[in-house]
Image (cartoon, rainbow, N blue to C red; front, side):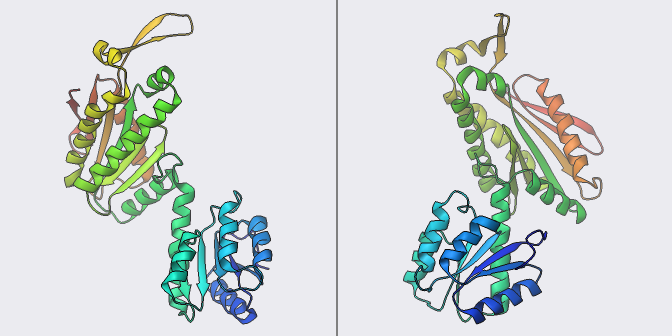
Length: 324
């Protein structure tokens, strides 16, 4: 059995043919993976629960319990439902492929396969699985680890980029006043605006991340950043009114009582977007980007209404207030 304490990705191979198990184990371990094998579906289910592998390679045609049933049971079990699966079979008919995918498999590999194809599919599914682990459960956007990785990659390459830090102003007050369900709706509303804006105005390789709560990031090109930021603000300011009561909108603020029963007037939700522009050489570490964006956000939140605050290496801080 492979060392389950290893930092290498752990792969469970479930196949009733011994020579297939032996070949897969050899190929995987030769390329840096930890591999554990099961000779039937029942043992595969037990090992999946016991070791919680990063990936399962599952043979379709097995006696007693075939790959379809194993896949269904894995996806129906809370403990194993998150584990990605590559189905392995000698059949090449489209019907079997579709049935496997419908049962929850992530990919399909038809025997005979090349070693290169196997390793590429394994890598792709593992990469997908890691992104899913890090994804924010509410929006599905990449989380903190992926954000740090993306920034570090760009900085290591001395690549030019624009980093947008997007935050809802007065969100806590709104959340307390209207309730958590409405709070989640406002976060999802902003997430949809960000996604649609980046898809329509950004580049195909732009990055969207969700730090948590009401904090998002977008990494795009220098020439696209301004339009992307202003569109997000404009769409949020116009659309977020549907998330609030007409009386509050007419008043222009929320009336919230503090712990002593005193009434406070809190402005309606707006957006602060902090824009850090890097020409490729000035910033060296992702923590620098984070620190600058955080300072810009604090500066922007002192202003009333939605605002775009930018930092340029040469000219310091500039802001564009967006009227609501």
